[in-house]
Length: 433
Image 1 (tube, one colour):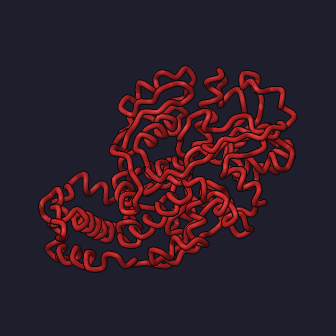
Image 2 (spheres, rainbow, N blue to C red):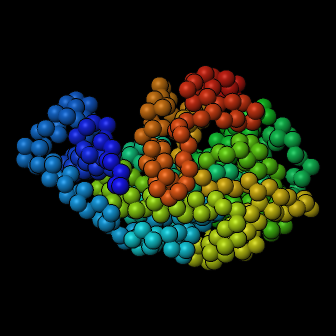
Image 3 (spheres, one colour):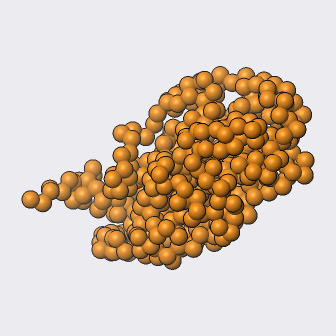
């Protein structure tokens, strides 16, 4: 017996999928008629979406647009895509999806493009040179609010990796393990809008150091971090894998602490895509989201890590010795102090974009003066973190998504409640905002 269709929430469509497709079609029309984001938002605030759509429908039948969108469902409108990535293991699902066939499985021909640094990724994404991109989790928030760049609406359909970072120090500091003694030291971070920046600042502040006054933080692209440490331009860095392990492999550094020991389960990198692209190419967006979630779920299985390390280590991807990538992904690694550590949760790959992750990111952006004034924490997090879409994709692929989009978690012994961000922010003694 065929299962009965469940009507959508508005009652105008015979399924939730049809409702979603109709909404995507309507938004695509709005963006086509009013391509300027600022102008469009101004009109929507002044007149309301219903009024504007009613006026448009007099000369463009919206039902026809919806029907066209639904009739083409399943076939990517744009199968040939370019996706940027930084050569780090955080991008494993995005990278491996090409050689391991996850993109082609969903009808896509994807060129993954190695990129030098995060500012370059941001600029190429803004200029639509990339259709989607590997991004640091805070980047879509900064882009959507116009912080540090022009304002564009960006979304996170999937988190790429959790954990997978470490604080690495030069071997000359092996007797300076107490961060309270780090005043005057120089640290590398990959980007201002990065979990690396926020976690290092958090760690330093918990030790009583003001990260803007007591140490020097320098933005260094991940591929250049080891060279800068070797040249003594910095004393250490909070960086992504496998850069951390490469510094140990080269005999110039040791792993001081894994980021999972600061916050176990924290987000690191994400799959970012603009709202413009998602609404203009809904079928491509669906296929791409499925490919990424599928690859991320595969990467999260420990038994697949060695295979993945071999796939992404070559020069056109990470350009690292396979043993370095394998140590970072499997969690059995040399720490640079003569020990072999076994920590299977050093890196994980959980695609679900918790909205509470977004709220935490926004508190840290405000804490360090990147954003000011009142912040609609929950509203912005919901717009950027596409948890509902991710849950659907996970269910379709046999993965079990969480029942909710928010949760509490603990960072260095302090519980974060996403329902009380301002109280959390006011609890810090050291902050800018």
